[in-house]
Image (tube, rainbow, N blue to C red; front, side, top):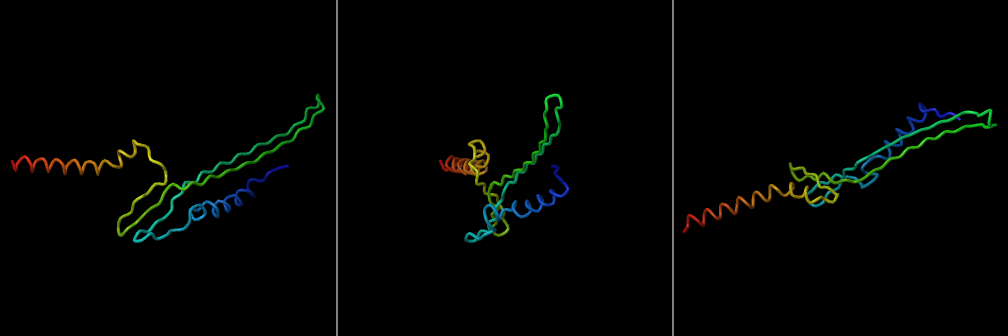
Length: 126
């Protein structure tokens, strides 16, 4: 048995075009109040093939073999969210504490600066 990869490749490509879409996994773009939300996915693919043949005349054997495999994984990873001219990415994955620190850094810096201003005002008022 012989596999013709030139015939199989267009079929695989067509399958991927039809199945590896965000709409297939999590749905189409939607509105949430004033926010426009677009699902974002990650797609991974893998293909493999094998073959074989042979006869072992000294051992009265005969051989054949073939194998083809493919796999695809689709994972929702978040949403692009827009409001007016602002666009941000909202992840659906759990964040590590380390990543959370970096994400909160601007907010923490702003609070720190506000506290410093309040201390300066209190110091000048005394």
